Image (tube, rainbow, N blue to C red; front, side, top):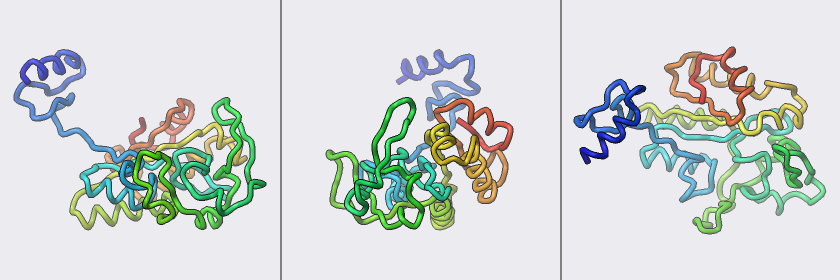
Length: 230
């Protein structure tokens, strides 16, 4: 254990502020690591449902991580991709004619796209477990949730448990949404910032991280919010 601690301290010596053999955690500053409920407890329950997020919190998650996409009427919902096919029962409720072909990160995808459905239509859908190796008995039980519903749940759980549970929203495919939903560049980002500021304030100390795998929108967000970005 001493050797392993020394290795981590040596690797991060420049950045570390407090790393020693006496530290209970091998992090840069000796504080406990944050546990992120990625898509919720998605190994047990269909991902990106309130039930999966709550289960992650029960298991000790400090933050829950909803991936966000936009509906046709511009509502932020939790889905891993703009395509609904693999994580919902959309194929059993809507005809094939509702599919469309769109360019997603340079790949042509023919699918049921969230941006072609209103929130009212999406609320008729139920989540399914996309991984066949994971439990399938909860398929069809849980609804597709909005960011507002997730924020409300997180605040409720924080109050119930007496500890702060944070939120770690990821903007999925910002460039795709700017073109496909035809709201224009950064409308997705503006919607997210407005919602988060109303719920948590405009502060780096808010229990929030905004996540994106694109760079341009993070640069834009840097000018719009003090909330942590990653």
